[in-house]
Length: 244
Ligand SMILES: [Zn+2]
Image 1 (cartoon, rainbow, N blue to C red):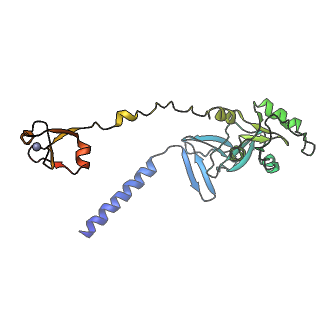
Image 2 (image 1 turned 180 degrees about the vertical axis):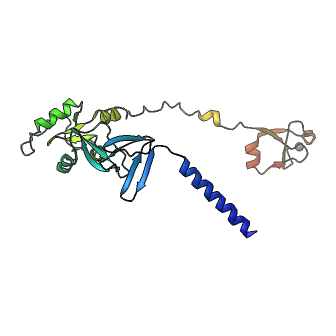
Image 3 (image 1 turned 90 degrees about the horizontal axis):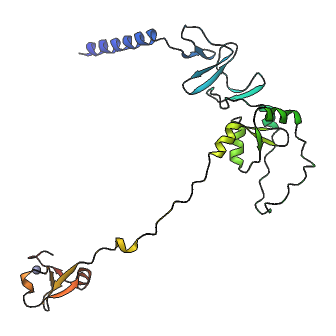
């Protein structure tokens, strides 16, 4: 019996190996030095972008999946720890600009909104060359109002810094525009009377301690209508004959 189980397990293992060796599709391959992307024909992609699933990855000259900031052409791209590119449209500035980014000044909530921004005498002048790159790429000036949003934007490469001003990528701007505050739900006034339980009328007698249906035979001598709640409150019990 034991031998039979071992045989079955071995067969299953052999089958799984057979499948893994016969299935050949493009995909990632773990190498001793890193992760590579193998094409359908068995060759390895190198120095190029590849898309796998929903992720876009970049492979270095040796064919390994890259992470962190990389520069391809004139644009910078950020690849997360799994290698997925988080800013496929590219950023005119890379990690250096990010490192030089000072912490955004928290907007003063008490300052009147119409107050003109103080002259930036101490802040460095915007780098005209970098700004031109931003503008050419379709980026727009961005005034941070949310520190977390700003940090996420910088981390994902969707927000750049030209030395004095922030720039938002078209993707970031579109995402912001999509964050519309839902209009308050039109709520109908709760109908208090609709939910009020219908008062049920029962009948009691002048001397008894039970309440009855109108048709009960115990009501021949006296029949006093009363709300059920009142009858219950007064200590009356349900008649066992008419079962009101
Ligand atoms: Zn009764």
